[in-house]
Length: 347
Image (cartoon, rainbow, N blue to C red; front, side, top):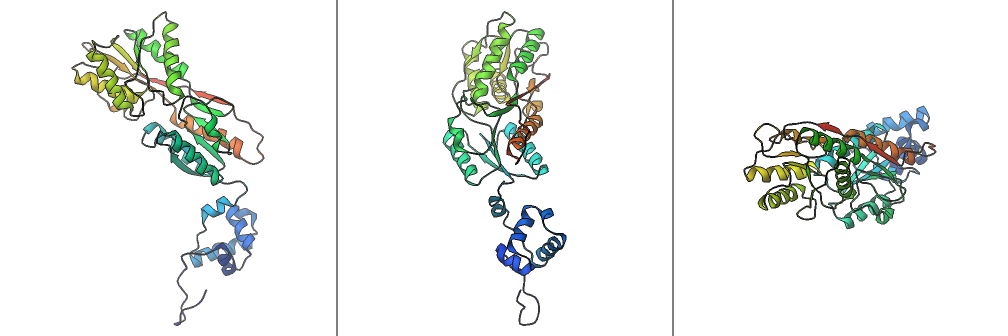
């Protein structure tokens, strides 16, 4: 670098091209590129020279450009319907931590429950050559729009038709367990269905229907008041409509997810119904997912706890098994994880 007129060194430059840095460090441009791709692939003397130059000149590489130029990138994409939904936020957290441990970094995009934005997110990830994509897809399971990316893809939480890999909760087993518990401890439940925003809506409805049928009971399903992802509002409207029409068809209500249950619990309380399993209560209420706030409702919500960390780990492992160059390991096409019954005060 040039010196100032007073003989002191020039201050570090803020923006360097890799060619400029290589010249200043006294090594070739390909050597610098190899170093940032894999430091151990560079001879120790050159490696030390590059590190010394980075400290001296304050150089930081454009990691995005370095990653983009790799034959196999070290970036994975994550697409979820909403980052404000605690389930997806928690899964993303575990995926990011696992990816960092495996030497990858993550780009997280939200589809905002909009199929067009979901397609756009996948196109963006494809354009930057991510190593693979983890997606919690919208819709009823039809796969065509997810061909927007050429990268290996693993579906989380909600499955798609076709040959893609999927990791999620075993809805059939978890609703069987919840229905068994509710029937054993009180009046058989009716079911508040979730809107058809993804494949889980139909799977959970079918799982409830099958569990009731195995007990010789007629399944009673309350349809959601409207479509959309505002589950708390939809649960509140659905429950209010049922109560004002003469009451729930059962004194036990099972909701397709915890967010619906939050809304239903609020509606029942507003109408003067006491929710809980204690003597004198008017209504038992349960959900599914173990939303982080489920322990703190009043009363605390009985639910099925999904394995957030397990879903993230299995999804990432499945993706890396496909994305790593030369790997011969092939992941299971479908991995269903068990949920755990959380018996609390609401049912």
